[in-house]
Image 1: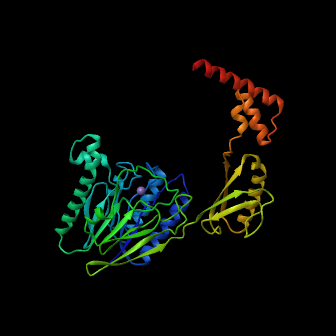
Image 2: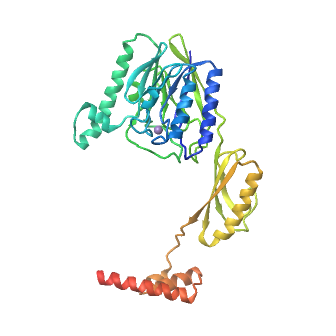
Image 3: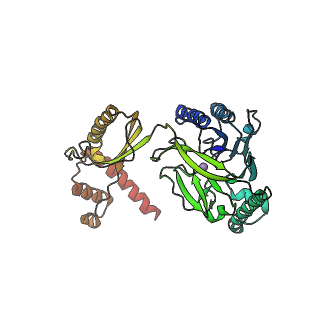
Length: 391
Ligand SMILES: [Mn+2]
């Protein structure tokens, strides 16, 4: 039997909603075409509390997945308590069950240990009342207790294939640098996950695709099916699991036709900068994380205050060039450099703040018009006197 494993969907009306729907429609069609007979959902179906439009889109997609076989899912850290209950009341062609509590489910003869996002507070509430320090240490013990319990519950079904479906932060996982951490609570180690004694670990939460080993079993992050944030340059997709003869015998990542989000970083080095290596004139240290063709591009460039206007004009030119080279859209973002200069020695010998400012401006070669100079001095002197009075 083949199962589709899809995770970190993030249906979000406020962010590239059309793209999300398009990519999920692709998955529904592709999974059906490949002969998948069930779906595993790894959590974070929503970005936050669901809106009507998000619910409609997510429900429509889950119902599509339920036409090829049962849908079994776990709650992630992004969903609000109770927000997923509606799915368990849906009448699809096949059953739909999303678990907000740890439980063993099954699709055909495949056992699924369902591990929703673990929270310290709910573990403590489930197993006992403790003080804060004691809680932190105990929560991990309780989580292990949950995992052992799920493994034993699967033992009761004999030698069936066992998949762990978990929304968890794995200790040694690397997140894409721009993935915001939401509801960060407790991380689990591969050793702890291993207590589930599964033949395959299908994990959600981290959007970057990666794989680990737990004993003889593969443990993977399915990764998000679309780009959710800038700075997620890696490939996007879902996973097809192949279960035969009572074991997970293979798995394959399927790339989705997700629109890339390419981040370009650069530093403004002045209009006389060298135009080499395809860098637009005036910029240096340019780093592109992905091809800009067909991508939504963000150009983030560092610039000193004094160069903002000229850099902005050059960035606009670069923007036009990227669009001509096939970028879907280009956002320009300037990052003004906070200049930390070496201390000007004369400043220390100047007595008042006004004198210090004059010395600093002179050292930097900055020309401040007399009226502005006067206004600043008046304010600074007032501040200085007030501070002296307070001291
Ligand atoms: Mn998550």
